[in-house]
Structures are given as C-alpha cells and as structure tokens.
Length: 175
Ligand SMILES: [Zn+2]
Ligand SMILES: [Zn+2]
Image (tube, rainbow, N blue to C red; front, side):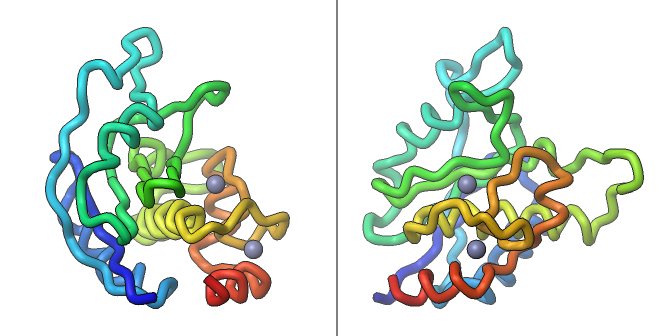
C-alpha cells in the first residue's frame, strides 16, 4: 500500500535534522517522506519534578493531526519519559500511526565517543527508523546490530544503526 511518512517538528528542531530525515528515511522504507507542520508541547504534558515530557500524553494529543492512513513522526528537542522508564529516545503508538522521537539525549557524549555531526545524524536516523518500524508493526529484535533492537542507552543506539536485519526486513516487506 502506498503511504507517506509525515514529519512534524517542534520549534527547537533545526532544519538540517528535518532535511536529513526527509532525504534518508526513504532509503529504509518504500514510502515517500513529506514535511508536515510545526507542533507545540503543552504544559500538562510536562512533569516539572522530572523536567521531562510524558511521551504518551504528547502522542495522545497528536492523534487527530495529519492524514489518517499515513505514518506520522514527531521530532522534538525536549527530553521524554514514559511510565517505568527514566527516559525514552522515542515512543510509537502503532494503533494511531503516530510516533515521536526526542533529540535531547542524542547530543550527549560518553567516554570514548566524542560527538561528531555524523554520529548525531546516525543517531537521529536510527531512532526515527526504529519508531517507524514499530508503526509498521515490527517488535523488538534480539539482534544487537538491528535497528529494531531495544535501546536503553546511547551505547546501544550507536552499536546498532538504522539498518534492519534480514528477518526484520522481510517482515517489513510482508506488511
Ligand atoms: Zn522500540
Ligand atoms: Zn531485526
């Protein structure tokens, strides 16, 4: 089925990030990628004691936005969390074809891994492909180098990358 991936973004997301996703996501999915509109975040989605936004609340509000039947991805600069998790890089609501990723932690460094523009791009693309993979119906993959492997840290994200393993790729093309 022909579908489109729509990109929505908060004001703090820089244009090169959107250009990267517009250009590169089509390498991983058989659909076109279009730029949607700028979105805001609401006060009741923010938890002051944590300094983070709750991903599920943002996704719930976004549900009605954009063309139904297409995949929609929000890109935000703020840090996100979910119940039971200190933070999330992103979250997907496959029932409503909406996902979100946060750039907040993708700028960070850890010992032995200085941040370069290439590394940042690699992380953004990896997190975006992962969440869209969930929208397509893919679950977490046991293969550590596969984009659908669960990522609990930047070390995990940097180890995998945006590519699907053979099994996930065939599942993707069955759908
Ligand atoms: Zn996941
Ligand atoms: Zn896989």
